[in-house]
Amino acid sequence: MSTQEHPPATEDPAATTRKHGRSVIALLVGSAFVVILNETIMSVALPSLMVDLSISASTAQWLTTGFLLTMAVVIPLTGYLLDRFSLRALFLTAMSAFSLGTLVAALAPGFGILLAGRVVQASGTAIMMPLLFTTVLNVVEPSRRGRMMGVISVVMAVAPAVGPTVSGIILAVLDWRWMFWIVLPIALIALALGAVWVRNVTELREARFDLLSVVLSALGFGGLIFGLSSIGESASGHAPIAPWIPIVIGSAALLAFVIRQIALQRTDSALLDLRTFRSRSFTLAIVLVTVVFAALFGSLILLPMYLQQVLGVDTLSVGLILLPGGVLMGAAAPLVGSLFDRFGPTPLVIPGMTVAALALWGMATFGLNTPIWWIIVVQMTLNAGLAFVFTPLLTSALGALPAALYSHGSATLSTIQQVAGAAGTALFVTLMSVQSATAGKMGADLAESTAHGTHSAFVVGASMASVGILLACFVRRPEGGGTRTPIPH
Image (cartoon, rainbow, N blue to C red; front, side, top):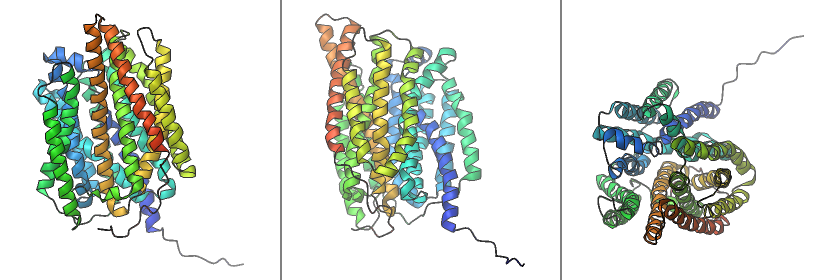
């Protein structure tokens, strides 16, 4: 009896790319979680910083506003960067910038150096999410993208949500510098692993750099973020400039930016290719993402203020109260991704938006004597509802695009998230400030006036989410995405 010897089988190059891509994605997800966490980690620390650095509240707020402004300026550039430079080069650049900014912030002797560190941090953070999106779209087959986007949803939603919790725990036992010292070794480990693991799994193409588009983008998105972020300060009388000025300048620059991109698209040289909006699925998902992120970030900024000023809860307890909702969203995201792969977005987005809207209506009932357990339940309900919305929207939006537009779709989606988050924060804080001031003039004390203001803000947020339910009815599974066919002009 003889045996026939077979030559060793060679592994499919595409399978090899996908296998290596999964390792890269795992590293990108972990790195993105760390860098995105820093977007909200400063919120609880501002009172400590004001005392330690002898600065006012309006000055301290720039540590958050400056971070958001840098993100708004850099993210629109990532469409060009992802086309022009390799995955490896961009990852190493992003993590190096984030690590350097973290070190500068930890060593900062005063406010100016600390702000500079935050800006450098943000420049690295801005690259990570579009980089992660584009890598997933290039190496993960469409039938498994929902599951992978579920993991990414953990980064996008849970990292900002647990930022206040992390900072609250650190500040309970250490000073504010340890928020950076604890993060730094994690960032350096990710950088070292990336230097060993990360290889190029995306295709590069020729891309022209248009300086005018960069200037218009910075003025447009930067002006809008700055103006929206200043509205809350203006309502309390601490804004450095009238918010309508940067908003008007930003809107005019953004209009000029759009006109410029439409002209450049004819030669495939746009900084941010807006042909992504020719996809109905992408456009509808972007609208819903705006509503969802406005509601999420608005509630994230308002709940700690309500807990501290109305119920008198300390900083550490605020972080712990918000933690279960973030954990629940993280636990649910992979499950939602698997359900998306099987059933598509419609059976998930509609009930998810409904639950989120009901939770926001529940927050509108918060008052002077609301029990903590009820606040935790409602906040967990909101996060559970949003968990069923994030993954289907992300996958539907980006999966509907041709492969040549992946990088630009990722950059557009990440930019919209920043603008929506700033808009939601501005809307909620302004409504709360205005209504609180009105109640104060009528003789209410601080707790009563703040409770009245948060009620008004949550009513508006719940109304926005209720409109989102109607929009969710039109979300469909993307068809034809991921093709390598040319983009129609």
